[in-house]
Length: 265
Image (cartoon, rainbow, N blue to C red; front, top):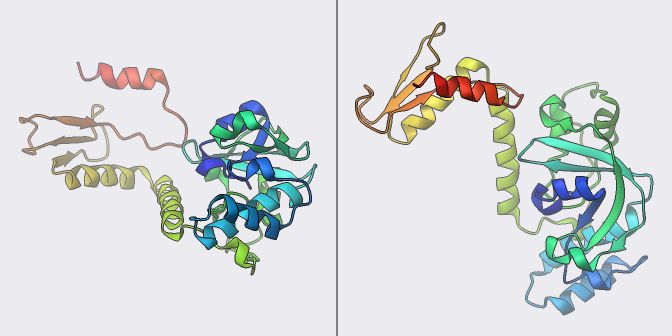
């Protein structure tokens, strides 16, 4: 699994048919067969003000990308905004790309990505949880790879115990930021599992938390108005917000949006 800049490089990976990592200060010095300790020492020399834990974590992940990943291995990357995974086969040894350094892609491998993207919401809880590490480069358990490649669900939806590296190299460099990322993805998972009524109540609750008073339509014919929100609660004061709740996994079409806007006039 390679999470390029927290998933921001997903489109670049797909369009360039590569997978890549940054560490621009270290990238020009990376050689095949270099050891973790050599990378750690070089990183410290280049960035003496950086905390030791951050240096070890970075050096370890660069080492894994350069030496542990092999041609023919599966590579996976994730888009938090689209909630989709790309999976493909690594097709080259690592390459240094000076022209991609500023984009955080200086150390790269060619990948033959599968055409089909995999929706996170289609995966089992067990697989989603194992794909939640905040390290840039980490190994995915076999059961999760099988589900991504073949659609085979784990026998149980209880998360198996995933081996955790005991090496100091694998410590998380910024636990607070990383916990925030995991929590945010978990919140999105929970929201996507809500049914329509629960989603309507959630939206109304968010509007009330912003200081608006809301009127929520009962189930049935609502004339395209599920929620009306305004400062006074009656819709006389501006701003007056009209909400139509559409809770679905598919993207909204332009026709649906035009239909909603047309009902306002």
